[in-house]
Length: 294
Image (cartoon, rainbow, N blue to C red):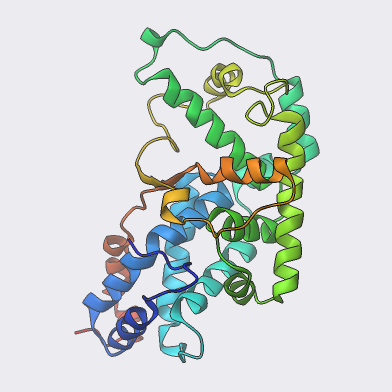
């Protein structure tokens, strides 16, 4: 699997060739282009909206935008920068999703954590999966909720800059801002998350009030964790750390570094294959008027 966010990227020429063939009507090249980038767009969408079903919709909408704008790509930048700029604009300006209403601020979410009771884990015999998977599901779901407490721009900058290791040059180009502005907003998002986790999260400090194992049964009772349908702790091939190795850099604050490392341990989720669903759109007469596919 390619990593489009490597600082030194050898895939730009391959992308460029696929774009040229796609615009000329080569359907197979277009499918290959989609396959190269769909997992990364899906994982961005998933961290932006929390819910996998919503993330699938967002990914498909984004891919359609990229495909329909391919003929306007002038190769003045790399395809990856151009495509992820479209993705960034889409996820920042899209209609607000359900979970964004539920987790709207750190103050509200912190109050929910402090006021929610601790419960013992269920008996292993009463659930169809290993209890460790349920605890992991709770941990990832909770940390994804923390991301939703950031505003959309900060959330996306954190995902790109600290989870996927995008450097400030690429990140600023995708976000259409200066490198200084990108770094400042990344630092602000990192500090907000680290501050919240430093006072609430047991992963950061065992003396903090919230511990995943003590909240798992509560999350099951509320329907956020379903042993029959795990959303986050299955169906992945890599961790984000493995899919997008971090640049060699040190952060000034211990809590910030620890918080970032916890987010980078999250699964890099296996993406649905959007080629099949997109093919239905590609075969429509309206779409074929845009591309003259062979």
